[in-house]
Image (cartoon, rainbow, N blue to C red):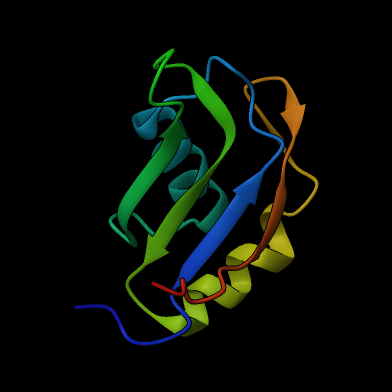
Length: 91
């Protein structure tokens, strides 16, 4: 399990972005193969279409912090993405 502070929120995703294309973009951006342990584009339950945001989980908090600095505003599938530390979800 990844330590606290490893999960990033990624907003402004293209409708065509998939879990795999987002993982590839963040691994290439980090320059560390295998550093992304999970990537998930959030889909609408009714339409099964992207809701325009997702989450990427890194293997360490240091890699996640570096990814925020490097990937925020970068082009992923034709759109500049917004990258921030994910907040913990209240249930």
